[in-house]
Length: 263
Image 1 (spheres, rainbow, N blue to C red):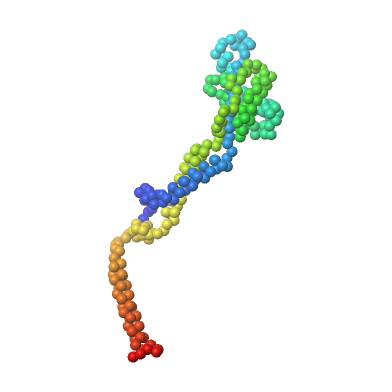
Image 2 (cartoon, rainbow, N blue to C red):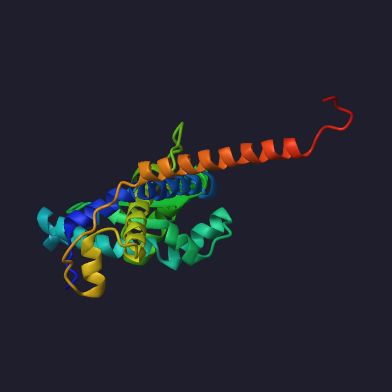
């Protein structure tokens, strides 16, 4: 008989292995929490905003809309310039950082809102104070260097980064990690339950016999309730053995008179 997928049997197998699935899921949740709280270093983030507005020098560009469009087109260029070695090398030298340009580049991200001339520089670091210092220094170096690089002298720092009173790390997120751990644990637990069920070759019902031998079951031998008969036979045998033991003891007592006794 061909093996077909039976959703009812599948759910019954999962229900049978439900304790295993719960244990594996809780194990992964606990493991994710332990790693998040004890092994992963907290990462803090500081951000600063920069407004770039190219000054109009050509009367032909007097149109305000044309000026805004030109600035928007330059925003992507500014994003690349901020993370370029020309800016980051000077930031590293000014702050005497030990990181290389590529390492610092990985910790800095630059973004801009749609149709906006405002650039947001975000810096991630294990120290909130260092993140704020790197963000503000990067903005200051960009403001100074862009004049010679792009002939733009209208760059303003709108919102410098500051150290909050009670900074919260942006990474790791223990709750998110534990949620991911729960999903992974549930999937692994379910897979393990299915694997154990498939590897279990115990014959539990007539369908299992049909699947193994490929023949149809014609009859079923019911279970014979022989427990009482067995107990009764056992009791009778015990009584017979007990009577035999008593007779043996009487024969011994008669055949072996006591030493020094009186008759």
